[in-house]
Each structure stands twice: as C-alpha cells, then as structure tokens.
Image (cartoon, rainbow, N blue to C red):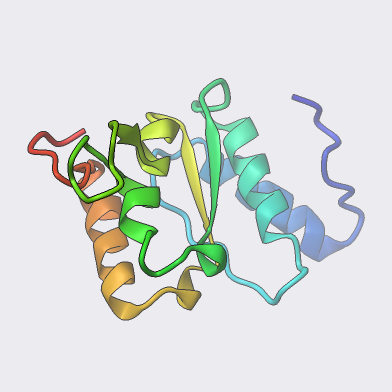
Length: 136
C-alpha cells in the first residue's frame, strides 16, 4: 500500500490522514459523513487498504440504486425457491464481502424499514439469506 494515496498538505487533510491511520487499526464500524463529491468512497477504500482486512474483499453497495423490490435478495442473498424466480441459491453482497469490508453508499436513500434491517446486520455481524435458516 502506497503511503501517498492522499495528498495531505493542509492541516485539515493531514488530520484526516491521521484519523484514517488510527481508525484503520480498530475492528469497528465507521461512519463517514460528508457532502456529495467530498471523497467518502476514497476514505472508505483507504481505511480498508490500511486495515487488517486489506487482503479481503471490499464491496461497495450503492444503496440509492437498489430496487426496493429486490433489496433483500441483493443484500442478503436467497435460497433456491425463496420466491418465484429463485431457481438457484445466490449469495448477497454481505456474504460476498465475507470478513472483508462493506461500504454502504447513500444509506439515507433507503427506506426506514431497509435501514433497520441493515442496522441489525451491522450490529450482529451476520446475515441470513431469504428462505434460509442458517445465519452466515
């Protein structure tokens, strides 16, 4: 990992880089807040690259682009027969990330119900496929 992924000349940017270094070492959830275009995705990728999960998957979930009718299947996966078109089992995005990093972009765009489901996953660190009976 290159030490120069962020150009940090200003005091504010140097502070951000120091925070990234510090937070990357913690095994914790991180909230990255900011206006559109401020580099939240770049900060998330840098946290991942500097942390213990760097060699594991980094999965971005663009919450604003998820169809409300398919959100559960996309995020959590499904078992064969869980619904009409489920002809085979499929891993969801959280399962694909495994013990890597999941970056939830534009989570505020989701319904309150969907946000509640995500909160449960974030807190419990496990997911269950639609139609499944085993937590992953």
